[in-house]
Length: 214
Image (cartoon, rainbow, N blue to C red; front, side, top):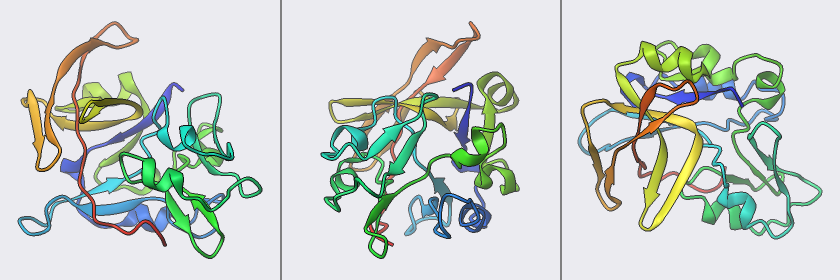
């Protein structure tokens, strides 16, 4: 997938325009698939949008016993297929980012699918189309990254597990390590992008206390 999402927590102002817009996506049935979380509510009002990171090897799909979670040809991890979903919630518990949610009324796991009805046609996802500060951006790597003073991150370490994602987090460029309390230290590394330009690949995970149901 040439175009993807870039999440920049430093730009988020907590307006939740993305949450309202997400409900309007035709495939979301009036439910929002995006969440705005506080980074450390006891210390700061800083927030960040939380969307599906669309892992290259999605744990949610790997643990689905009914093969209900499909990945599109361009790498978008979809919500569970209703005829196949068994209500087991394995995906909800397995996701390292805490993204999939179980809809108790529909008896179905639902998650961000990057507004696939729009993005597959070349349109921006609803959240990216309304974000006033660029905290959520959608586009090609070579279009977004050169315009930012932050470094793109798509490798995340959880203990001994390394997860590579198609969605990028934008983190401070001067940080070689990012430490999240309770999650360890995440070290940065250099890699080479498809455009043959060097970019930062670091690691990051955010703590969230949101419910697993809605």
